[in-house]
Image (tube, rainbow, N blue to C red; front, side, top):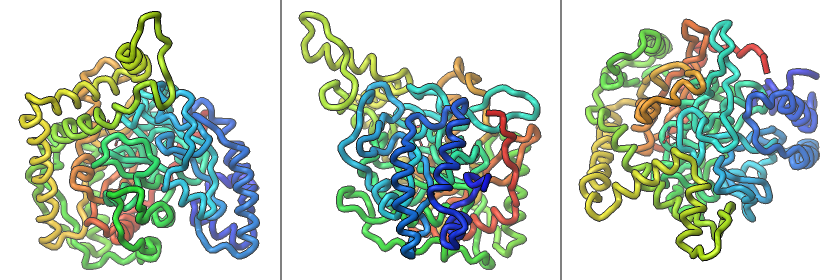
Length: 495
Ligand code: GLN
């Protein structure tokens, strides 16, 4: 049977249960696609032996009547997740040769459910970036192209490998992480679904830390239903992560009823940015109409502190990163620079970090160290923390006024060309996150749903932002949007 790698999780689950296909066949189909797709740069470590072994075990479980919908489902795993005995480098040279002795909680839960690991996926170094171009492995490539132009486009970042692999049907779904938009922006750039759960919904244990108060893992999938199925397995309380919430994990798929009548959807006026492309404006207006037609009530809302979100994020995230990345000292993990006669421990730290960290990571460490330094802590870091509280309060206010979810564009543009931003001011790249960082700063769940194509045939996404811990409701609204938008386009295979 061909085209097995194109299945959604829900379709594969049904076929596995009906005995129409085996996990071994599904897994082999994905491994074959992965072998043909090296030019996408999506998979950076392939694990076919592990995959086929897990698939055989899953097949035995399914024959015995396995219940979990993720059993037998082949996945790609972002390189930020520590996977036992398998390279886990966060796409950084400083973690060269690091094969963890332990497995992240999220991936542990996926394997316990019977899911299959195909390999590790490309990303921006330490998840810092919006284009997957800061990776030590080289960039991943978007399977989509503009019209007949064969210029290579970014799949977005930082979860660019995950997005590229799912969009190109190299796997059924992938894990991602989102600190400021790294699940939602690449999902939007590649025409797939990306969900960032409420902060604390998924354990961060065993995921290489970028900015601990913002980082969240989430599913990157071919449909909203698949995001619901996969989130249920990824989520849950973990005593090893003190910020993971001790709350029951509902059956998110059961929350998808197809009925959103009476729901209130807020349209925030501050997200109507100056210079926003007409196509994005139109997509947003169309999405609003779709939700209205499905029976939702549309209200205009205001989130007045939105304009401070990017500067706040680009103080808080580097501050936390500079502290988290202090552990890469050449002693405990991965790479150590070769030293000259007379070098001491200071030279070892300096040389190792200068060699091991790329330019963007070094920039963030320097900014972070600066905003945390004695003379500037109050002026930058403390002020950013206060503004963050105000941004969160804006959302609390609209939710307490009865808004169920907020609709915004996911990104300010479609996928851009690889290398196009190479000489731009770094702030240009940071502007990619303008619609997504607020959600991380406020700890809310957010989902990007593919909603249309631009004039050049590239996918565009809409973002829905939900109430904390109400991923079920958010997924139900997202499912209605997905249904109405009817996005079925696929990239033409060139790889
Ligand atoms: N693009 C953002 C950054 O570079 C977000 C990254 C992320 O969500 N991991 O910080």
